[in-house]
Image 1 (tube, helix red, strand yellow):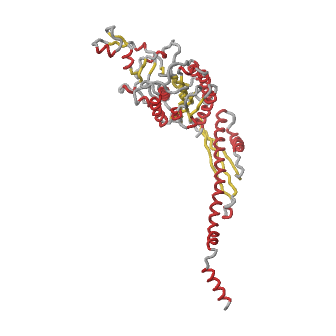
Image 2: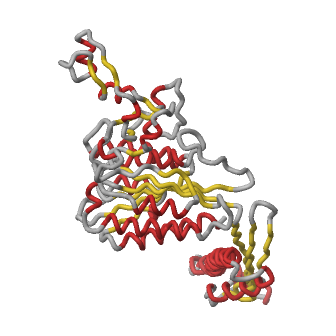
Image 3: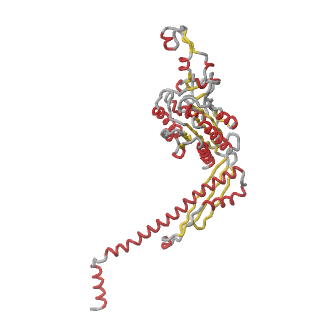
Length: 447
């Protein structure tokens, strides 16, 4: 047989043989499999380097914004400071050829921005076989300040249990510290507004408002007056007897309001006289009368008179039962531009962030309709849903020094899980409010 014939026979035998086919097929398939796994490993390393860079750039941008706002650095120092901050923050050891740049833009009349950009590459272990010796990546972060204004309602529990365990003075210290913290962010009048909303079962607007058209006097008139016959002390029995009921002069009102009609108790609808359910029901709550001890402090509308705001907090005294919902509802009302507070109109040249801080030391006990916590909580949850849908950021604080259950409604009302704070000793209140202040500062300058 010729050599050619022998070769043809061997090839034919090899073709017909089934021995070792699996190994051959595996060897052939292993090449793309290993390539894909190797590429995934390389991409994972590059993505990790990029994620770390993003976090470092975010912090760098925020710190540069703060330094420029505080006057710690000048615009000529931005690049050097950006590099110094970034180098201290970026610790990924696999990234090569890392570069960072900072671009500052001063906007006329509406604040400033700073763009911090970073780039780098990761040497590949597997993809270099396919001709890709490295993977490049880049990302950026922008901070804006001066064009973001903030309005904050501090809704503070003034109920009787706040007298225990040093909770009231701790809250007062913490709230005033927060005012100092936020006021430091304001470079111009109106950059930061704060309102103070003390609450118990009711809220107090001050008896001097008795002539306002947004008050519903129906229940108050029925409970406060005299009958033409001294035999009757209630409006219903007086009228049923055919007698005349004469309400007291409204200037004898103590200044308190109870919850609005449902469902307006869960909204911040501006009151209108054509719809009595939108009005605020007056109530003759004894603890709202000036001169009584203790005395529920009136609401202080949005203001940047820091001294007056802090004086309002220091004057607080613990009294009455807990109705978180009414405090929250009126806190939201203080942020609105309609009656009864008529907050200053928002300038279209600015972005606004609205926030509510709700602190309470107990579970809900009483509102206009219920003396059952679960029913009151249900109304409050609807209110919180509505406020959050209106882009109100809600922080909640439970001061729980007595071993009460953790408040599910306060947890629910917080905008995110990290915005609910549980305080187990009064001394922790200051730390929590400082943390909220830091979060609000980021909310104001970050974009």
